[in-house]
Length: 119
Image (tube, rainbow, N blue to C red; front, side, top):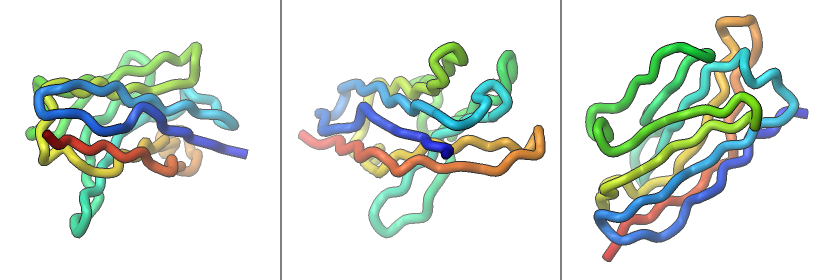
């Protein structure tokens, strides 16, 4: 059974930091490109950051460049999103996604973790 479990969300003041984690089980983690998405109330889900297979590239939504960093630890089957200089507009539910398309595997989503940036 495949599971992606996000953690690390919470309430933080503007300018603060959070680190999200997404632990994967039931998959060969190194075969999957990993990404973080977010969905704010009343808005569509949007890509925040992605990291391709080990040694591959990283890419970010323009609004988070220079503030967010995505990384992965294949030994721990975990992908991270370090979020610094948080802004109220970063408030959303954050989801991780495991994309196995490059190796003919399905795509999986986590259940999401809430991030709220407020004074």
